[in-house]
Image (cartoon, rainbow, N blue to C red):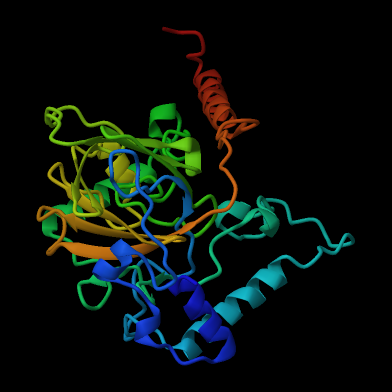
Length: 359
């Protein structure tokens, strides 16, 4: 039985948590107490391949005053409340209910005020994240309060500019958010860092060779290509989506360092943390912990944006089954309707001013 599964059994039965039941560190790299051995690729490296998910109910930032590690009672209470919420939202709808009022009911988010996503389609995560046997209250582990560090003056200015852009005119494709244009996912699923979006589609497919590691993100079908060894860094002016990721092996841990992040991608992260500077660096570590788990660690370093670096830990758990294409714009009329509406407004204004048809 894996460490994660043993702990889950302990929560349900009231069994005391024993440190000897969970394998960590060198023991995890050799194999767990049930004789599990780290699977390896033909070139002898740990095999990270397959389908994984980082969906969890554990928030990125820690609620004020909470410890990093939760008690079994706290876990049971939170997961119980989460299940009650899921059951309530999944209850059958009243077929005789009134239609939403004109203009919507005032709700925000994906429902759009008039209903958009039935809760059947939501898969935000219903379990507390468990890392090396510890149920966590936040994904961020450093600073000690589990919060993203304060922004520098330049970081605050960059964030204000990003929000101003989001609130500006949306009358051409380039002004629409990258998530809405299906260029990248909303949130930071593909990353780096690769974080759950607390909504749906938090899954990944990993494929590796001796020279490359590919991570396909379910959300918007993003694909990261990590070059292994000592590849030549990209020139500073070349900034692809998801940056320039270069990997190496440190023992049985895959270490990935990413630079050259795209400024438009970082601007999209404004509501999550802050748009990074051109010098932002993200370091990730992937370690097979047991048959069902990859321990994912990340460190964000950007002195031009944050007053200190920050780190986090996220369990990636084995996903049974395969991932299918996320056809983001399939049947999506929103963007064309938005742009058509802007053109109609321009035509009406031109007619009113008598300038319609003028160069």
